[in-house]
Length: 284
Ligand code: FAD
Image 1 (cartoon, rainbow, N blue to C red):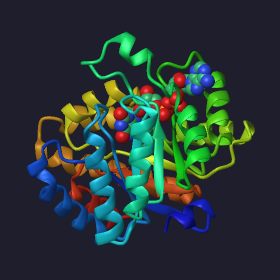
Image 2: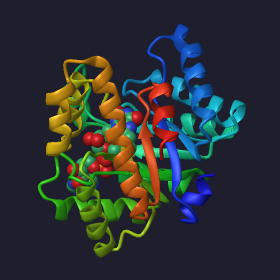
Image 3: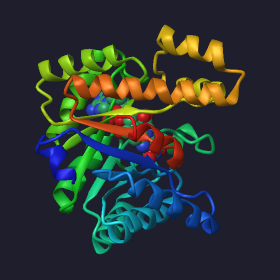
């Protein structure tokens, strides 16, 4: 239950999935979700790919998680791609489907969007969306955070100031950007505590099962790669089976350490791969 996270009564386990790209691929995502549900997560979140119509897919997936699987669902929503009317319509659809949680995000500029379009969005920062949701809906709101700083922020200090504003606007809990170095997360926790950000923070973990995936992930997230993980890639990157095993083992060790250090929640970026996720969960 998501309430366990909010009340900090246990270390929660949760997963992220993404919606299907095409309309005829829903069944595959539902099957993924059925398999993930067997792992008894406390909640499952579904991403939103900026660009209008995809929001309906997020609602549909979130509704399946909530109503068919009876697991708390979080629907991601981004300022990029949502005008106020769309947001209101989306929130009503979520409520009508019994989904009570959203992850309010700024989103990134899609390649197809001009700077002018990006900069004229109605909700500028995630905190603007949080203010709106708090005032106009009864949804519970989560936010994103960055243990190694958001890539646009001039400094960690300014990022933390804006994170505090976002939380104060009405965020009940945070989900972190993926990271590979737990020390970065522990340092971030000290910084958020010092900044008076007291809501629970789920640690975002992404298992790296191929060398190529690490390259893409790092360029998107900006997360630093500890020597131990770099060595895994160097030693096993050319052997698919060994690389997969070593990547899963790395994620398991990362999560065990986080749990021993009393983290509020573990949020696995499942990449819609239930088998990998199941192997991790069986060992933590
Ligand atoms: P914000 O909180 O708005 O912050 C963005 C930047 O602006 C930061 O540098 C911050 O310091 C700065 N800032 C904030 N407020 C102010 C202010 N008042 N004045 C000046 N600067 C300010 N993207 C998607 O498109 N779809 C998804 O489903 C998705 N899911 C995600 C899930 C998680 C857990 C995470 C960590 C990220 C996700 N993203 C997703 C990516 C996210 O949209 C990007 O990282 C985006 O660049 C920032 O979003 P945010 O909500 O953290 O932004």
